[in-house]
Image 1 (cartoon, rainbow, N blue to C red):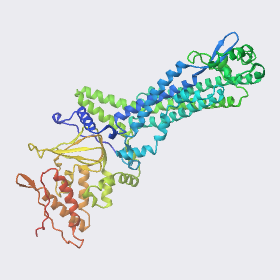
Image 2: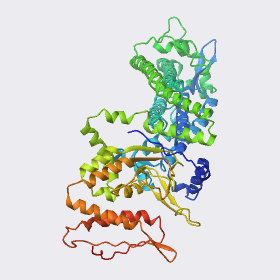
Image 3: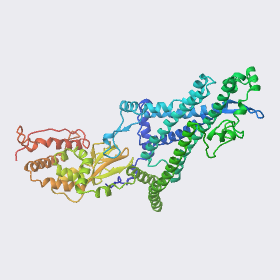
Image 4: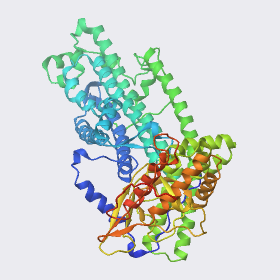
Length: 635
């Protein structure tokens, strides 16, 4: 279904600047308390926040592995190899501050989600779907869906572990300490990695892509791969420390009867005691656990490279290890090495595939969009359009692209068989069409004919769809958005009337009266109201010629009852167009006769629905209008 643009404003004096509209919206929002405001998930404000939140999530994922670098081996004496395990206090303080700042974004995101509207899944058959803006429903849905995961991701587990849990564990139980430390941080790290996926999908749905440029998208995928290698290297570093402590622990148990070895001596906090100095002069655990010895007395396996090169005894930014891994018979070591190799191959293959796919598919669609925008900009510059008009044109092109995602709906429907295409159109449009009282009385065949002729309509905020006094060429059935319909009653001084049209309502009903007339000229009826979009609007449009065709088909039906009903409708519409002035106010007297009242056979049984429709239209056009039912005159 091809999208139609709202008609371009031809009267600059009556045009409202988009910036003024935005200010009016902000003023209206300012009257609502902050704790009651509802955010549109498709708005530019929330899109900007999602991008900021994504950067904060990636920053937090980059920060967490540094907590694994807090423990390090401090060499007390280079000649004897006396060493101990210490904690980098400066790194701990720095990472705590940075991680706390990143956690604030997670907490703020929870607060924003409590006020973010969501799309009803049952309404996604039409356009973008219906937004649920009820605050209680939004909060109830969030509490029962994503709140638990978001809270677990926002809890400052690394800070709690470093400052509260780890000091409570005995310094002698270093294996338990490191295992607990690693698992707590790793579990939350995996959870936060998981949250990046739906967040990226939300940005893609709102903006089309995560990054506007193709190289930006490729860099984003490369960054995810680097984060995986970053956490893997941090785990490798922590396991290297653990293997060193394991060797010291075994050697300490072997010589405890002779040297009174205490495993707590490997902590740098106990190096100043008198018993430590006595033990240091007698112990041989540092010589037996020397990874640089040839051959070493303890098999460090794939961690020997980190120990021999001093990666665990210097600051993490001063050394690195990247040699091929050589494992020992230690089972955990082998499992970890196998996992590294397998996961690396999978991630690298996935990285290449995603980058190739992203650069080919996304860049193609974005390039198509850029070419269209560039052609449009060159055309506007060539014709010297004013900047505000250029901005409106660019905004419509962007809105249309984001709404259709570059998919040609008309070509998809035309490729379907006639019966399937008719059923699809009926599924999309039938409920909206039946809300018009006149159409509700038609049979399924004519309703199908109307649905087949409906086309999609899209216009950005602030677009004038029709003006008072201009010809009306189409009838709109609103799916999403809001329209303002106003009138000055033909330029009457000190007169202004305005109503708000919401989803499910329609505009351009003047065409219906025009189409019902048995003899109409080729000129379209004049609009009695000015219709302007207050928000981005999605609708279905029924053109004048298509509506006239349906009306002609309606008159040619063989049903005598429907033919008589049509004559009553036409007579009523004629009378509706003849208001009478009374006491400086316009009053409308409509007379009708209920032919066959009580029998259910008279055609006037359903006239009330049609009259209600026409009175609804004229009610906003003529002030003080009333409906007075009197007996129908004979003849």
